[in-house]
Length: 367
Image (cartoon, helix red, strand yellow):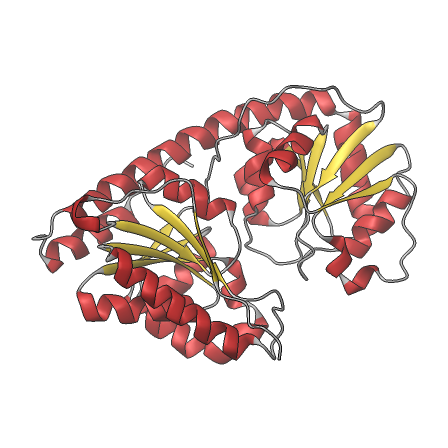
């Protein structure tokens, strides 16, 4: 008989447990890790928890996996009894579990919705998504397009697409002799890995270091890899940041529009020029700090060559954009903390919470 693995509940470093063993703020995601969760949790004084069961994320095992994760989430919530819970979607079943807890206890929850919630594979739960979003105290999104969708549904969206993760000061061990681009990959289906490899083949003077567990990606089977491409495999966070720091530029590509990427947050925090996919939301956010590529071999190669030939221009632009995004992140995280302070008062009336939510969601920030 095959032994069933226990669900893993990992708690992030930023942990706040208040008197009476009541943690007032938790941030939950059904995944092994996420930089966005950790950065937001640290900024608002919450504890981040990652709940995931098993290693096979196939559709066949999803029902069993979700049931186990729902039970694990329920037990976690009752153990900590938080006053407010942040929860990531997708999958919508994580916010659904949290909503059931808040409905039973009178607590509040805030959804952090990534662009993946609108993927085709989640259309079968679109009605459930709308139902839960309308019952959330607030829905955090990364861009105005998605904010408009939730607002139309009757939910209360707050745009938080401006993260600035803290990065440690690492020793600089020098760079390779040739220009090095680190390609930050998770080998998700929205990452054009075939096009990236083809671009590397026509840009032989540039070294491509591709992070992530490439062995799981069936798209790579039988694909010829150029000599200037190196797969690093999955790296622990400290190793990953060290690789980014030694890079001349960081590449993060997606075929999904309206998507913000952790790798871009990290690259900007390290003041690294970027090669990003040519989407309007990325252009508006990173401006001259990145070269924007069509997701084709020629488009990617052209963007890389542009960064190589104008590295001084991009280095100056990165510093300027970093200062802008840092100020915006500080302003938004401060506003979010101030909003959350009301949940520390158990007697806060529901009407006051709703008014405060409306004020925060309608607040304009200098973008």
